Length: 100
Image (cartoon, rainbow, N blue to C red; front, side):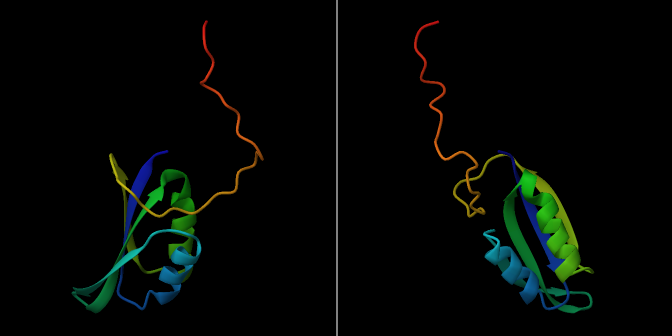
């Protein structure tokens, strides 16, 4: 699956970005921050690697001046991720084959 942590630091109101990420199903943690130029927000989200581009696009749209970084995660427990509809209405039972 592969997970990444995205850290977003924004000196502006990040309400629209936060609302978008939550509406899209991403787990989001928000902290108040104080930077060189005043108050801001630090936003953390653990996302699947395949969703990095979606989150980056949201950052560029809702907080174009935000600083962000993406880090690989080796292990994580629990989490909130967007639900993806299965393209197959049934599940193939692979791996239960016996014998050679």
